[in-house]
Amino acid sequence: MRAFLAQPAAKIFLSLVCLIPLSRLVYLTFSDGLGANPAEYLIRATGDWTLRFLCLTLAITPLRVISAWPEWVRFRRSLGLFTFFYACLHACSYTVFDMGLEWADIGRDILKRPFIAVGFSAWLLLWLLAATSFNRAVKWLGAKRWQALHRAVYGIAGLAVLHFFWMRASKQNFAEVAVYAAVLALLLGWRVVRALRQWPAKRMARVL
Figure 1 (spheres, rainbow, N blue to C red):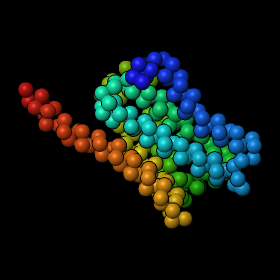
Figure 2 (figure 1 turned 120 degrees about the vertical axis):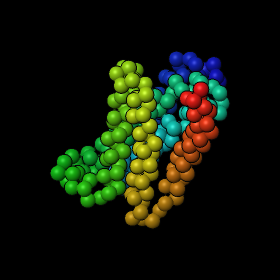
Figure 3 (figure 1 turned 90 degrees about the horizontal axis):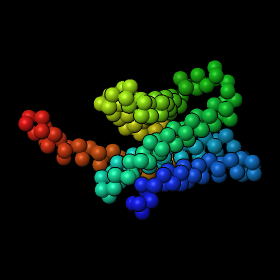
Figure 4 (figure 1 turned 180 degrees about the vertical axis):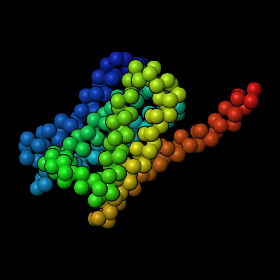
């Protein structure tokens, strides 16, 4: 398993797997399998996959530390970009299929409905992270500033859950929201505990 993770073919395999949800949505679209409200189906499906890929992206660091396999890091950027890709599909499903590219109506909808404003904010932050995810951006920003910028992913996780929560609030259906919130809380909580454990050692190193 570890040997395979180090191979170039592993990234190709990951990309093919990550495109399976898109392939299924394309098939359902052309086979009239999206139900009575295709726009709503596409919006919800792409939103769900955005959250799932966000969870997978955040799971890479704990997986690397717990397994002691540094090879997992090779997949973090790809998963992050697929998170952004499905977030773009989510946004396009809303703007194109639900709102018909009526930009004035879209602007009023963002101002009127908080959950859309929150989702739009999360998408803008994802866009910023995707645009600076490449090695040239790291050199341009500097490693410390780049790392500080990409910690915005934690805020994105919070905005994504809030977006999902407000969207489900009208129907009082929070079961799925609770699952995603629990997963993200676990992934972020692990980071907090790890940082607290490492803090005394880092402080001592600065003193010495």
